[in-house]
Figure 1 (tube, rainbow, N blue to C red):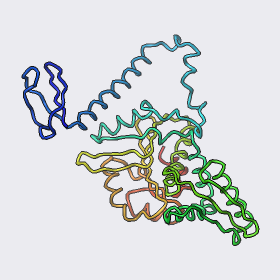
Figure 2 (cartoon, rainbow, N blue to C red):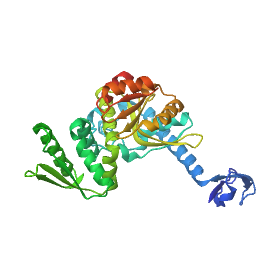
Figure 3 (cartoon, helix red, strand yellow):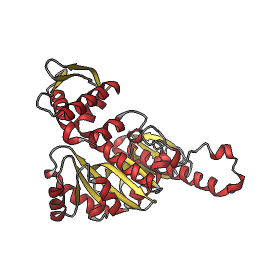
Figure 4 (tube, rainbow, N blue to C red):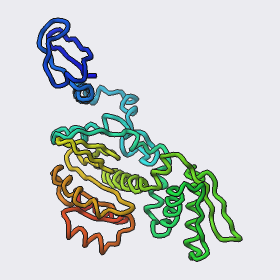
Length: 331
């Protein structure tokens, strides 16, 4: 169905889909009225709602003198320094995403954010940071779990017999942590056979995490910690859906806006990435970003290859280890 909206009598009514994009006589008052596709009408309505909501908050803040704010009321919104980034839903709201919506709106790009994607109340961020901090040792665990998921196997076994004692302890501790955080259903440490057997979870969110989303969480947390440590104002989102003016869809893995004006886009790849380079080059150009502001974060990428790829393309390539250092060169 389509929607007719009369500016004269304020009638709002459904119309046949075939009338979308036309102007018809209002069924109530007879005045000419436009007929809109339903999705287009709702998107415009939501845009106006969120714009009005942000403006109302801004006006309220400006109207109340700082000295008039009660200490208790001021404490109701915690300062960023007081927030535990690894355990908060403080960022999962429309207001936090507002500057990002505005930034893309000025470029005539439609965006749709999943607010829960930056809710760190769960354990996704903790496990992702553990992986990113020791990928060389833990990558076999990820590969075994991902392979078992793809084959629809109920379990994955990680052999430790060829590992150094230090690496074997790190892998065993990580597997136990996966169980403690419910990323796996069971964890068996088989000392006689020197392996660890994991009974896998089938939940889609867990499957997606091991299939590559862990790197998005790692990149997000790296950016958040960098911004907090330096007391920078920021807006952040993960898995942001874009629709360009020509209808082309994109999804940004991580997007940050520092101080309301300096953007950073991070595309995270834990597998093959080369076939998408042209697509990301086109997107970087459309967004008007410099090469240093459009980052390809590739899991396990060597420093040598990161430097070489960055020299070849108008993009910045880093590994999960090199992301934090690159942030200092952008902001």
